[in-house]
Image (cartoon, rainbow, N blue to C red; front, top):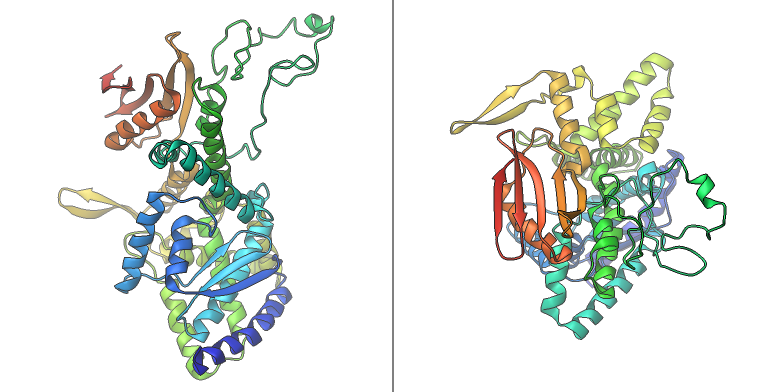
Length: 469
């Protein structure tokens, strides 16, 4: 290790405890922090996998090479990666200057505060997540040894194609259902001679467990089901235990990552707001202050073609602070900010706090391609706000409902796209139906709209088809 690197590490070790103290004085509340400096290859591996202990998959390697190529050609750079865990791990990029790592440390302190206190993260399990993902990765490797890498990878491909189709309101693990003598197949209380009196006003019960209990047939599911992965786990007929384990693992991981997708603008805006305030409290040399100002300006640089979450989130939190201080007195703004940080996600954040003045100040607009040119088509602030909110509904993924798991009384799967003025990518749709067939092992249908006309796509195991309804 060179003397300069050793000196920078020593400075960082001296600085971080001071930054933690400043952050706590600002009332930030975070888990115990662990900082590590890693080479670029490690940072980009973590960035591609999403976690340092996750299972291997070819798509993660693809993401790694894309990010590393952008880094090698100086097109983009990841300065850090922070893990929502307890203790909270922050990986800093080797080669950062000391002032860059100071700013990054301040940034991740606020991220960790957000992870710990935002209500949408309250159902995640930060204490055991790293270990549980490592254990799952070991199981996946064992499956590859038992059943062959190609077979396991093909099944993981199929699950990953629909891994976003969960019900995020169901932040709990699936409970196994079994048919036993003391309890019936759906885990209900033991039967008594008087049960028929209580159930006179209820419809006939239907069991959907994989054990195949003999009950009167009703529609499966009885109500449309949003959690496609859960429905497949509980009702697909030909899945083995290792299949169920892979589906369950990917579903649980999606529950872990979902709050991060729900709060991207808020989380980055919160971290940017606080790294700016924490760094202002640090004793910086003139050269360090200039370098910090340049780096911060790069982080919040607005984009002409997309939303910069760091910039928009920062401006919205600053606007909240200013407006509440003006109306209710000094300090009310910070109090309101902490309340918003705790209770909101990006949808409610934008709907409630993106004002007309902010839309005009930040020059937000809607645009689309007309002919060969991209043109601005809308600057009305409410329509801009509503479009942003709409684009973030269900984290931007289409809502797919399971309508019938026994379509045509043949065990076929009928799915319906909840159409909201955005058509599905037909090429992607058709490829995804092939993967869903691998999971269901019977014909799969998906109803959607094309040019505002109801259409049905089908894959029967050999070929796909489409028709207008």
